[in-house]
Length: 305
Image (cartoon, rainbow, N blue to C red):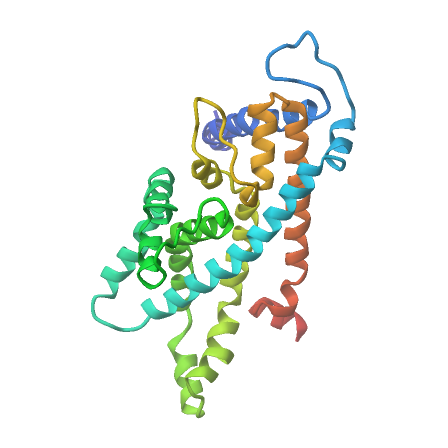
């Protein structure tokens, strides 16, 4: 074999395992998902399989639970994203200071990110329990007899607290990496020109951090609409029945999960997933279209020049 043929063979030998995995675990399931969303498949009986066309998609727009769960997901995003991103950024700013033991504090603040989600939810369920929770016990010191149902009546606030606490570590690390990438020369030059701390933050730190903020925002938007595990764990299992979270945290993915695994409506549930994909993809593209107006980019500045 010639040298070029050997190089070609070596290339395809290394690429083939990934390509097979991509086709078998990516492309084929994707096509099967599209096909299943057009049928009445129930996960078990193929004899009654019927082609429904776009009826599953049309049904989604007349299902009141779809609209309700979608609105709850939007509200969840409005509560979760600004809170999580803001606290992560503030935490990164604090831990970016030159103080003793900052490595220890970084490790401690990142620990919630490596705790298994099941353990995280159980810790918070103990903390937020209506009758025996630590939070209500503290509030009872000032208001005796307080029993706030954080995981039922105020479940959306409880869900936000759990998700923010568990995700602070990842957000802090990403923002911290961005802060450490800001050249010290720019900060020093601004201070020499007479800029105070707030002016340096507004005119140097924030503009240079906008690419990182943009990246975190995209990741958070995609992940927020996929929230499923925490509401299910909050609800728990009773007598072997599938969990039904409180209506305040009946998110879109909860409704999809119930349709597929609770009611065996695989075709309808997958159609709901494709509608979610279209919405999230459209929202992501919309955010990308706004990038030129607020994200600092040296390439963009060169193109404008």
